[in-house]
Image 1 (cartoon, chains in turn orange, cyan, red):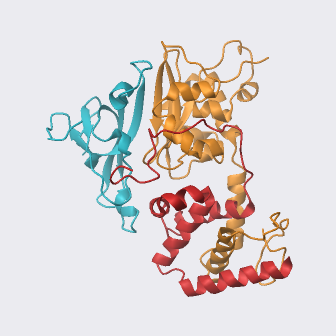
Image 2 (cartoon, rainbow over the protein chains, first blue to last red):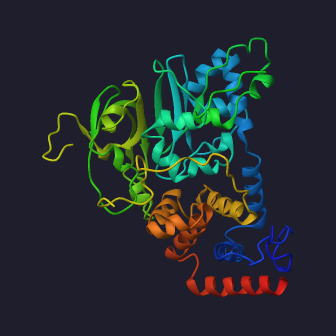
Image 3 (cartoon, rainbow over the protein chains, first blue to last red):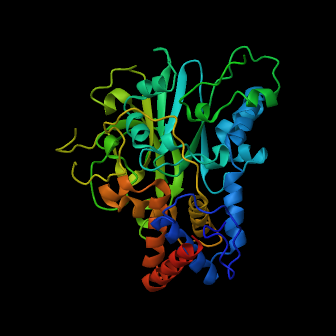
Length: 213
Length: 101
Length: 108
């Protein structure tokens, strides 16, 4: 994963494409390389560890969360376990949350949930992968707590007035996942098919799961 | 033992010290209901400066009515916002202060 | 700004429309920053905490916070924490960064 085109004979770097910026490496890119190489030289980190950690994060995607949601839709006992102890329930499906605790908030016909971290960008990464740029943006973090219905409208989601909207600001140690309602017209779909309806955005709560065409 | 119970009304203290706070300013001074007692965690205010975060602090999820948080919230009266707050930022509702909002 | 408010503490502030479409592709160095934080804060190392990462980012102050990208803020904070703890020294960091830059120039 070298940015320098493979000059580092003394270091175990993968060979990545050269940087596409004609100005060369940015200051913070240089800092990252320097810090990483120093930590490796000091025996604190190993290249294989770093590579494995990058690959582990790359392998996380919303498919993990979608699998969990689809199972909760078809299996009431799993759903109950998921709401009781999100981390344990996900682990039973092979999705490890790491040290963080997971709170799954369920949508009902009367309640819809939406997630944010106003202070930084806390996000259920183990279930959804890395957060989208908009989730980390000033505009989302500032506005969704104060005018959530307007924000949802910008995402194309209109909530009726008789549905209560609950915003969850993950300010401390918990991570959240929205368990959306299973769309009507999906009776007879398999768990795998149902999972394809569950997008990242509906597990954050800014959209609702799609209806099959 | 956690000081507050589920269902109890609490008010968020208002304070603006330097340091690493996990109490957003928009919720300071507001009153809400304890939704969940989440257990004890290392104090992030201390962990942020390289200390071990002990004594561990009780963390709560507190639910606030949006209309209580924002003066101009015109949407549904039932809408809420849940915030995770540490015990040392909470006071019983009965506490009186000269500068409550 | 109100007294005592950090630039990161932005819930409820006025802001414009949310750009839902732009999504920059993560560069390798950014992914490695993320990986380093996970490893350094994980149970095998426990050299820095996410709390220290966040505090370092919050201490950037308004100009830097707004002008640096997400992972630029992370690597700034991680590096600062490593310096504070004496895991790295400014001297070795400076020498290594100069070395990296000259390698990059040599390869251009």
